[in-house]
Length: 116
Image (cartoon, rainbow, N blue to C red):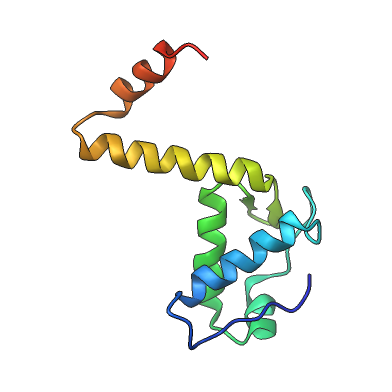
């Protein structure tokens, strides 16, 4: 993976910058599906950020479906950028539906009734 540029002067939080750099590496094929990422402490050292910043970024990417955490096996790339975008949109839809007073079950029923 190329050395990412983390800019402390940007208004974007550091963990978001780290997540964006890892997303870019996945999209560019530098971190391929099935590949294991370096430990968070090593990534933190390379990036010049705190280990917890890296861990927070990795959790974001896990929630997007791009990474998988397995005890004893580390963090692996499991998704594609497209899958990550789709999961992000799904999370946005679920959050919007909750704001409108819908439960997940009601949203699921609505999605299943849509003809595609």
